[in-house]
Image (cartoon, rainbow, N blue to C red; front, side, top):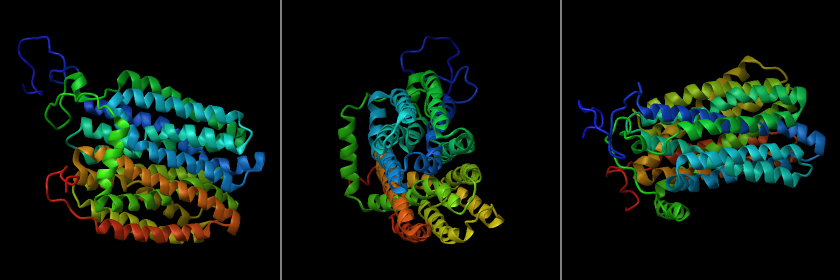
Length: 439
């Protein structure tokens, strides 16, 4: 039966039988993608806070930037380590259940932090709980949705869903900065917790795990039956890691993406606001600049997805990393108490480049590892977050030791040059997707 046509005689469909979209005016895949977009925005609200908390927590509790940075690094590391297991858990228990639990963990960590009095509690609530929650909704979430629901337009959908994180930053960063400035950090923490909880009903009511659940083919593809729940999810994630680790492209992708995380989440998202504040820039102005990054991140990531459908992903990544590294070398010269045009130019450029790396990196994972690409990408994402975690911690330590962030900016720029070389030597797969793990 052709899943895109309807019988002239009404017949009750068999369970899981393919059917036409019916009353849906657009393919149901786009509805699922929209729910995923909103979900990522709600979960990303928590990412708006870490860079805003350094000064308030230091003033109230006397914690060093290294201690605060270490809590953020735990969050980022667990985010990455959880991601590949989350992709496998979604195969086992379904997307809705995993994401609903993840959002609840984020909200619990943010709310519990309101009553903390010691640095270890910050590490537990923001590091462990929030890290596990956000890791379960990491980019492997969007990769799983894209792989299941789309055959055509995968690059574009990947770009749009990746941009959702930036959209959350765009919405919540200025709001949280205003709340922190006017009312303190605790109301801001409650705000992001509520944002995560509000999204849970949308996930439960509108998200579906597989096109076959509603009798449809993936967008642009042929109907396939829903596979049986995969047992041994954690074991599968580890097996895929061991298989991928025997191939050279995995280490090149993981290493370059670790540098990506170090130069974005670990560096700019965590340390840009406190660095700007060191130069007497108001916290609300610095947070607004990060929000502008979010605006252009959406444009850059969606455009990168479009480019990934048309051009060699390796060359795209090389250009992205090279330009990012050059821009970081100039950043120390741009830090001032007021926002000047050169700083705005940096923010616009960095926003366009922020996570433009994701669509081509995911495309290379698909090319190299076929049906295991979502889990492999989860491990590559783990390296991204490990890189981010190291810089989130070491950046704070460097600031405590040197009194400024200049050495961190220069080191990150040099690392981006290394990432440029790494992606250029990834071999191109000529055999059918999925053969790489056998080779």
